[in-house]
Length: 190
Length: 310
Image (cartoon, rainbow over all chains, first blue to last red):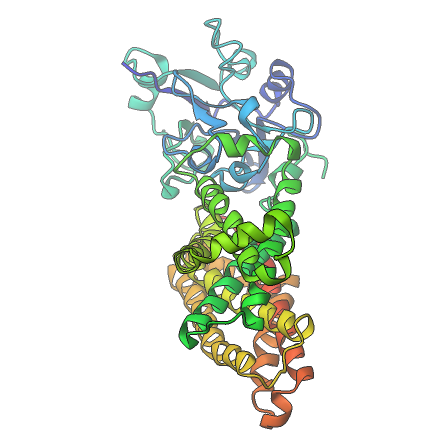
């Protein structure tokens, strides 16, 4: 059966520490000034003393119907055997069509390699060795869960089946593979 | 701002800048020049090389090649542009554009050789090729006209294929760009015919171009109205993009340059007395105003379009 790698970000557990952001930068050699992954911390919301912040993971959503793959003129943006969207550096000419077309605006031009770049769940490094992506491993509160949603016994499959989750911008039809567990303080019971 | 999560500059939704607007302008202008000149030639059944057809034969290859230079040097790896010529993805509008341009560009050069065969007659190779092409003139013209439509519309399809930008992701955009490309092509033909080939501004050729002007500007205005009303009635993020018509520098560009200069000056010049309106000065001014308007429209659509995301 085909793999369907997904990531779950539990916004209740996230503390916005950016350990994932830094681990990603180290693991994937991401230059200064650009990022494959950020956690945007916004707030505070509410009235004293009941204040809360929101934590949003900003990274490639690994869309089922990906704009980047459709628009890329050379096939440099492609889906690999694991179903993960990644980039063939040798085919990229730097037209930036994918950067412009990305539904979630998370692709960028790497200033060192001069080709398009983004999160690919550490597919060429950690995933190949059977390890979890760097951000998942390093998260101090276990707010990130990664795995194959097509495997019913996996933790991600069980979370998606039992918890209230949401995905960003579903109205645009890209079918993102990053699921979010909304913070209870936002008023949604999960 | 110094965020804990890092630099935000990569998240600016405006990815493509003015070089791409200039490319979209030049590609539309090249295709428009060919279509207008060929349509006039067929309509009049001309058997000679009119100044308009000469102008188009010159403008079409030059404009598209300048546009290609813009495109290649806007790549982050300009010297790897050949990768785009050997790898194709048929779901990408850009790839389809590459195929269309690979056919269109050589044809514009072939047509230029054919049109200028007399001055090229003494050249050893070019003269021979030009004479040989003469027998294929009609099929060449039909193919060139068809590819002109494809190239003109492609510039709109290219940016309308991105559903994250509500102002760009509309069905009318390719049609709008095709029509405004025709208006730019007609203006460029008039300018080159008047200044380079010294046509009389009262000649039948120039008046033929004048007859194209009014319907084309009318259709352009209608398409813009359709674009904006579609956004308005769609609501949400699409309607928010209409703020670009009332706020910021792109509102000024739209109302002053696209509407005021691009539509206003050519239309107002038609209210002048016939003698004055067909004079060289007024014709050149109106043509320059049209070109400015079309260039401004490409900038407005590209920048305002990319500034608002769904």
